[in-house]
Amino acid sequence: MSCHQNCLTTGVIHLMPNSRSVHFNSILLFVLVVDLLILCFCSHQRTFVLEVMGRHCGYLALVSALACGADYVFIPEYPPEEGWEDHMCARLSENRARKKRLNIIIVSEGAIDSFNKPITSEQVKDLVVNRLGFDTRVTILGHVQRGGTPSAFDRILASRMGVEAVFALLEATPETPGCVVTLSGNLAVRLPLMECVQMTQDVQKAMDERRFKDAVELRGRNSWVAFQCMSNFTVAVLNVGAPAAGMNAAVRSAVRLGITEGHKMLAVTDGFEGFSRGQIKEIKWGDVGGWTGQGGSILAREKYEAFCIPMVMVPATVSNNVPGSDFSIGADTALNTITDTCDRIKLSASGTKRRVFIIETMGGYCGYLANMGALAAGADAAYIFEEKFDIRELQANVEHLTEKMKTNIQRGLVLRNENSSENYTTDFIYQLYSEEGKGVFDCRKNVLGHMQQGGAPSPFDRNFGTKIAAKALLWISNQLKENYRRGKVFANTPETVCLLGMRKRNLDFQPVIMLQDETDFEHRIPKEQWWLKMRPLMKILAKYKASYDISESGQLEHVVRPKAYVA
Image (cartoon, rainbow, N blue to C red; front, side, top):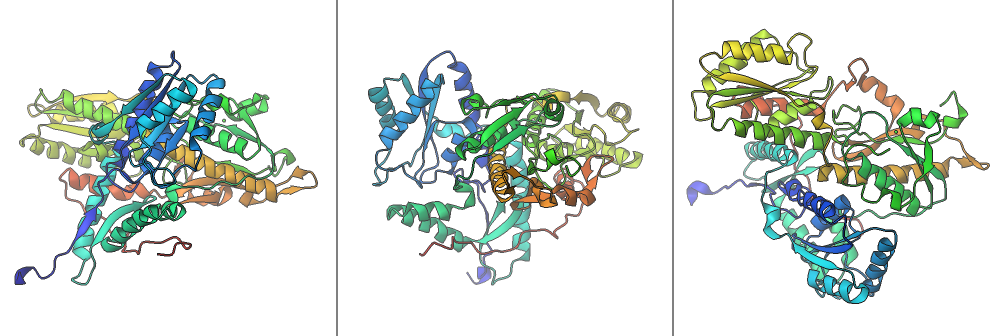
């Protein structure tokens, strides 16, 4: 025992129920199962009750309900008030009257009522059948939610958290308390282990004592957003640029929240061109039903007084090249498409020894998809515009793959951003690898193309789009109220035209004019990009010699408790 007086401990959360843990994003893939149910029973009139895992944490059920557009959700932290049976049946009847053929009710496995009595999926089913006479089915997904292939987000998160855990151990002293490595927004943080345990116990204690408001606040800001209604205005929603998966979820969120706030919502088709041609129509609550899971895009000053109105931009592009935001709606779906395709391509080589694949990704001049796709798929190299490369680096990669073919893993994967180099094209790299690898490995190339823009949006994009659009709409409502004078709205200050983006751990409103200095207009990319610091990690995992920048490694923080909470 004397040899082990000091035991340094660092943990990485890998459970399902909360948004900061590895494996959470993959659990949400069961939302795609709901998509299949919707397609399967679109010709029926049926109600589905889905039971979701999570024990006493309802976050998984809550974000799943947002992602699939459920009619009703039950979570343990915020039980329904007395008389919920009448309210739920009225909601289902109202939706059925709107010609909605499929009703979805999501029940967390730990759901309770306001008297701490369990609410089960069978109980909900019997209520719907007996009260409304709806054809109802119960689906308990169970441990299916634990399996499957990890998403690109989970793979990258696990890699980042693993590195952060090692740094935490290396920097620790005998006096350093055990910590938990987690993610806050897009920033790695370290939280004291015992404080996290105490917080978890406080949540359960609050629920046992029926202090449900405290339980919700203790869960964190992502678990609940309170909305307040304001004055009535006319608000238009338009999509600009190429389609990105998740945009429809954002439009749905903005429209329904705007209607809830009492605004008249308008939809503009074909972006600004459609706006100039008057392609504008009022959009109702039911018009956006079912949009959450649909891909593509269903819809797009000072000099002109008509444009002196509050404007807010929400980043939506698969390229993830919007200055002022770490993430864009649609990028996660594209990244999942790339990762899944790379997995299939690598699997195709399982019966063929010594083969290298060259994969071209989209992104314009932004190398986000190529770089992060390489990290998620376990690639050997990634060529991007932001990091210049020459023939010597290409030769070094060929030599590295030649040595790799002598090991048990006799396949290689190389990703290239479509505009990474004017001369070192995908064809050039393919021909170089084919020639230099003769007798050692053969080579194949694949250009993924526009398949990266299609498909159903990932659960991450659905929820990110829903939340960011909701916050944007609330900002618009507040700006309309503040700039309403003498019967009209007049807003011409820089602060009234903003981009809402994820910056490290926060969603921030940033005046568009202030983003000019951060933008490379020629190549349509930000001048500084956070994910470039992940490149050494990709190279290290591919067994290259590289140094990792620890300047932004997580720091030990205390768990922040809600101000109103008293233990």
